[in-house]
Length: 355
Image (tube, rainbow, N blue to C red; front, top):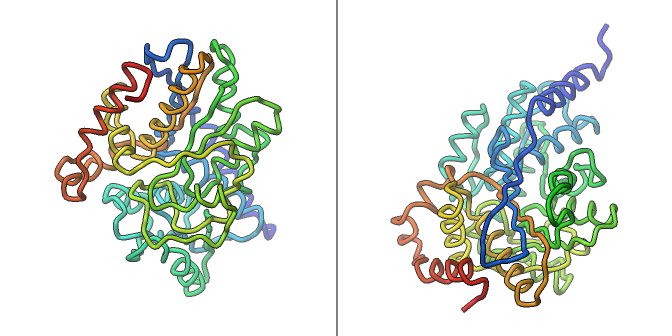
């Protein structure tokens, strides 16, 4: 007779086998001669099996739910997502033979919707990004399923002390580099799980590295970091998929963050385009936001005569945004003329200073 938890044990083994078959993501040097004695690196998370940083989170959330007994054989998985987490969770749900429903804003890129469907998931749309939470809870109650709730559990589902999390991966890959302990690590925040993991890891291991979190327009995270007012909300939505939220998420831990920087939507889009020109590879707008924040920090270090390294995260592939961020017609239809922003960013990369 099977033990009551035999299905969960088998499910965990499947996820662990998938992890062992997957190589780590690359740490890519970004050569900008203007920033002498400052080494810039891209932590390219787009090479995960599901194409984004959220692959790590989805794996952790599934393991957390399985070990807590929240997910059993046949459980319908529900998630509130702007797209990438849902793509990755759909991948793991199909691996375990579980139904999956993603609750998403209607503005989510069509490519992400197609990927969720490709992995066997179903998309359930809402009009505004602040409506995803209650709708996900309602669907979970209606189906008798489990709401993964990445915005609550992202900061606790990942082992921040190590266990090959993203922070450990970065430091391991930097071991033989000229500046093995980075001066800064730069990331955005959607759930806050990545910044919590990196910030805690830095403190646990006693590194002098500082954590910078970049925040797009129409997000409350930066204001919360300054005020600690957890009641802050915004009816608008970030135009950078994957980062920025209209409310303070439970997984966002402000005290592990050393600095936050606001980046305009136009600058995020322009930095994404310029980075593609520099690397020959397209990334999403959240990566552009990270790159923009990195240029701010690097120019400050250069002006102060400091040396060191900065690592910024490339969160997902630009292939998901060919009909939006990378489409000139779409940009114009949304009111974005990014040529002036491109010229400014190009000037910084060439000179090391802001005009």
